[in-house]
Length: 564
Image (tube, rainbow, N blue to C red; front, top):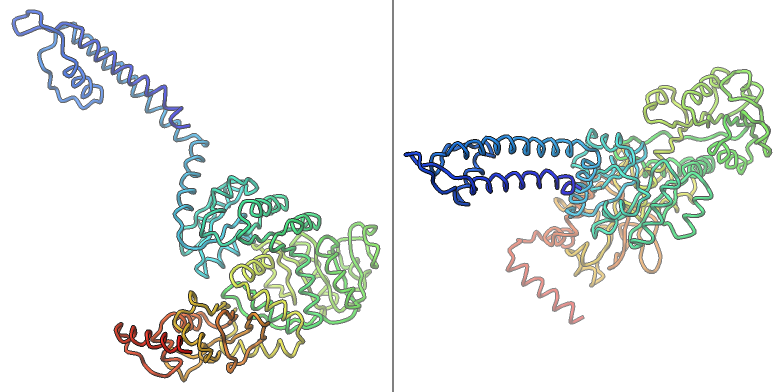
């Protein structure tokens, strides 16, 4: 586009130069005695026009000009001024055009994505959910690329306190060409996270990933059940409906509060604190709002034989439960719904102010209520924290937690599925054990794969099958000390071991999920990659590290292995 727009100015400049040079090669000159002389040669004319038209003006001329030549030079000077002015104005207008700026930003974005050398995630959507996911990825040191249709949101990526400069581009993520530009087929692309506000866009992203690069996982946010079914029909890896997910969590909290606390803690945003255990009581519940969240929560509580009263503007839409017409922000409506003798209330509308109003009014009538409240906007966090509900439902946080759990630590989602089946005492014991080593902040979780690429330092011991899990839990600085981490799950071909003991023998191709401090993860990575550290942990011998002796010892170990 730029070359097409510059075609006319360039032609004008070339034409002016050509006419000027041609004129000087045709007009006669004059010598010192006033006798006519031949016109300038082509090179002399070109040389004169070049330094004159570019305003350099050396003042050097081959011979004194005749009046005819001087008149022609005056014409050439004005023509060149007009030509250069036309060209410069055209360039300035071109630079100011949105289309040119967009094309330039696209080329810059594509170039930055092509140059990415570390594994990264492609994030489609930088709303509240996208911002949470990106901050968590940045905290974990994982690069990512952002696409969003809103220019304001893309500009917001530059204001965020990210550790690295983030490639971001304003574009419609439902366009496959945009996804390709953002690295969908890049060899370092680890996965796609489609968390825009539009279900249709997320569906289009999932379809593009499935058709253009089905080797990488895709995770999609969805609120419409029909679109979720559509996504599932062509094999979308992970589909997250925050309302269904919260209803599932609430059901878990009713059945096993400790399991819910453990699940919420392990999937929390890095740096957040362990929340107190919430125990939803059995009895009469009031649900204010019967939209997507209200209907899901009503179904969940009904499964636990709770007595329900729903408050909805249109009482006719609720047929399975007792219903009172209204919004729930008035004390009269709440009393009509039986708030005085209720044990809990769910403020489930899509308006944060109304939800706070419902909760505050209900607490004034019945201070002992268990309050579940929905928060829709991150900017209202301070208000909701000041109120202090027993359970807070934040759609963006639920989606972000699920994305991080699945994409950054694949074994974690498998462990969490097991957690949901455990009883309260088991979960409380796990929380207490993790608290002793990692404190009350969200612990780091990581997966160790025992193979030649990920654990080269202990490969020889794995082949000999003489290694137990405890060796991976010792400090390489002092093998008498334990690392601040615990194994949560060991997965091998023969099955899986939940909370494996330190005496468990580990084999090649085992995968182990750990939780603990980031420092423990770093020290364990050292044991897996450094032969000296591994040798010290396994035998207690502090290896010299000299390459000759290490080479001889490696040869000796290889020979012993080959002999059986």
